[in-house]
Image 1 (tube, helix red, strand yellow):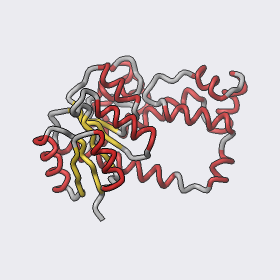
Image 2 (tube, rainbow, N blue to C red):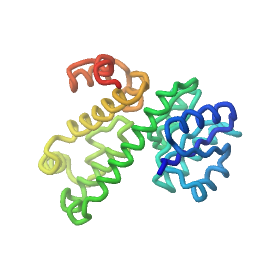
Image 3 (cartoon, rainbow, N blue to C red):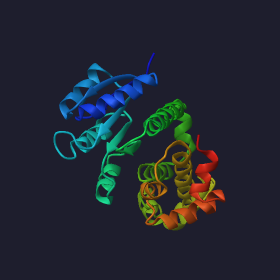
Length: 245
């Protein structure tokens, strides 16, 4: 059965172009152009992924849909945007999309973003098949709260003091127990998770390095590059050349 993708775009030329690309690559596609139409299609078309334009009939109406999807469903969605300014990118992040690509776009950008999103969705679903009692016993509740906070805020700068606050433990006890249960320090865990996500983006998307740095909460491209070199031994651009399909 073909994977169902809903394209929410009010520019008919762009929506038709995306539909043509997706159908050529074996996807089942439906198109709508508004908030109301999108919400209706969640029940009628039952998409497995949504491509969502930031601006529809109203500015940032797409982000309003993203907020709804983030709070009311587990459907992954990818933004289509003509904006790359910091203010817009920050607004995008708050709704937790699985990716975004900029206009004008290339076919490979669309397909790579979709493939990565669907792969991550499947991996997450597989992870959730772990028996509940086993998952519950793996970490104590304070450590689970800290790990969930890291996962939710991976696109931000995450400080150990904030993890301590979330856990409800004292600083010494939290750091000791985190290292005991997880196997590494909180700082190293956050670093590793950011680098895993960075590596995935570099291998599977054509998102510019500076945008990946911003997405991961780094204040500058140079600080992200230094961190990635520490992790991988090569710069982000060299890593991409080596691993990109």
